[in-house]
Image 1 (cartoon, rainbow, N blue to C red):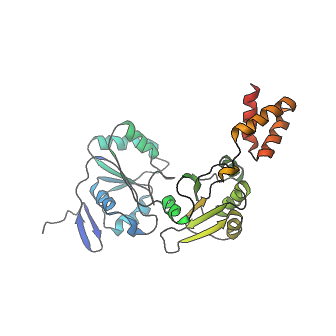
Image 2: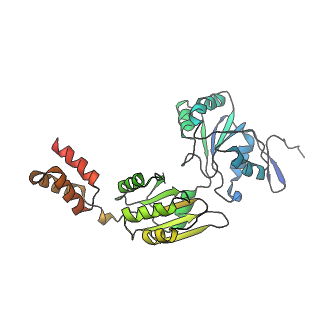
Image 3: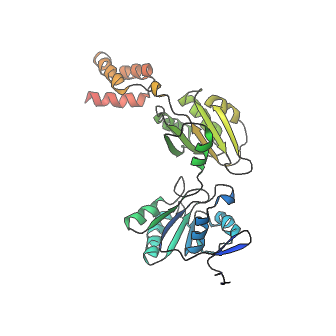
Length: 296
């Protein structure tokens, strides 16, 4: 039997496997979001076969790499150093190295570091290879029971109340399923803001600890979910999925702008804006901007 290389081995259970040296390139490798068994075989082979693994947090990634006996050197790449490191990493690949990028969990770049590096790599025309795998937003969408034909991932909402509500107001008329990440500390405030802006009866799902031991799905309208989470101590990562607005409920732009134009002939700007915004259920800021354009 051929001797296994100690530098490029990975283990599945007690079985050691030899990984071939990965060709030069930047490998974007998805990792499990909870259950370590969700790591792909191809991902293991690449992580064992590259020259360097860039980790969001080397201590967090050590748990995954140790579980599979991977001893590839690793280095931290996070939001505080990724812009400075990007060019150096690209130069390493240009010099013939194979480098993998992983985040603490899931697919890199989705609310995780990596974008400046991938952008720099693309500009430099080096090979960028995706190794798909676990993704909290897709896993949540698959089990939520909300429409999947169209959806948007919005990441984390602003932590402060006013900015959060302004962001949600910008999304009020969107008809696709909306997907957010949120921290346990802010989930109750987030759901309350959604109920206020989107309406109490809008259907939503909160997915907690997906793929982990205490995975839980909470379903209901936004008002009930906000009430359920109010005052509760919540642990674990959360994905919030919100049903899109009814297409019939979205005001026709030509119609309300025509009404606005007529009202501007008869009323002061602010009065006309307030009347149209209230009458059509629109954001005042949106109507105000349209009014300013009409006045030019």
